[in-house]
Image 1 (cartoon, rainbow, N blue to C red):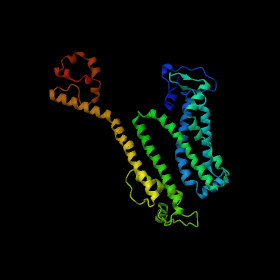
Image 2: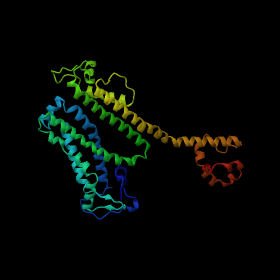
Image 3: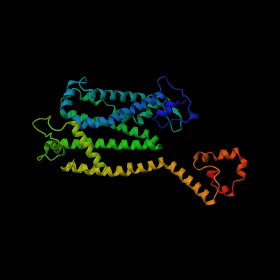
Image 4: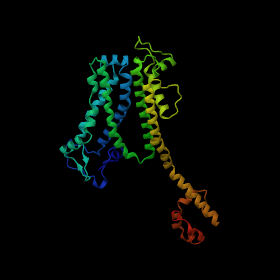
Length: 364
C-alpha cells in the first residue's frame, strides 16, 4: 500500500488507486515506483535539475572566459568547488539512470510491471536517451584540457543537462489543479527564462566586443557608466562578473515586462535583433503566464464571492417579504446550521410564514 509520505512526495503520474495497490512479485533489487524511497529520490533529482537549470547557463556564459575561473580549473578540483558540485550532480544523474532501470511502471492495462527485462525495454523506449545525454560528465573532459576552444565547446555541451527539464515539466503537470502552486510555478518559469536570456545577452556582447571597431556595445557602455572601462591590454579590466550579470538580468526583466528605461540599450545589430526576440518572447509570456494569473486569483476567491452573493439574496428575500427575524443575520454561523435547527425543533418550523417555503433549495 502507498504510505501518506509517498502520496505527498511522489512526482509520478502513475500512482495506482487504493483497490489496485497490491505488492507485485518482483526481484529483491526492484523498486516500486510509488514507494517512499522513490518519492524522496525524485524530489532530490528535481532539486538537482533546478540547480542545473540555473548554474549551467550561467557557467557557460560568464565563467568559461573568466581568468580567475580558468586558474581554478588549471589548479584542479581542490581549487574549484563549483566543479566538484557539478561532478557530484553528474554522479547523481548516473545513479538515477541505474535506479530507473530497476523501477516498476504501470502499463496500459493499469498493471504494475516488475519484470527487469520489460522495465529495461520500457525505459530504453522512453526517457533513457535524454537522461543519458544529461548525465555525461563533461567536467571530466574539460579537466586537463588547455585549449580555450575545447573548453568553450564542452562548456556549451553541458547545457544538454537542461533536457531533463522536459521530464520534470511532465511530472509537475499533475499539480496544475492547485491554483497557488500554478501561480508560484508560473513566476518561477518567468524568472528562469529571464535568467537564460540574461546569459545569452551577455554572451552576445562578450563575443562581438573584440571585433567592434567603435566600442559601442552594451558592455563597453556599462564600463563607462560605472567607471570601470575596458583596457584591452589588460584582460582583467572592466566590470566585474557581478556587475555584468546584474545588468544583463535587469535588461531582460525590463524588456520582458515592457518597462525598459533605456539606461541599458542595444547598440549593435546583433544586440538589436536579440532585443526584438526578447520583446516577442515577453509578449507571448504576458499572454500565457500573466493572463492566467488573473484567472487563478479569481478562482481562489470565487468561493468567498459566491458566499457573499448568496447571503445578499437571503437578506433581500427577508426584506421583500417582511419576514420576522428568528435568526440574527449578524451571526452567519446560525444560517450555516439552519438544517440542524430544523431537525431539532420541527414544531417551530410549522409556524413559519409561507414565504419561507419559497426559499431556494440550497438554503433549506
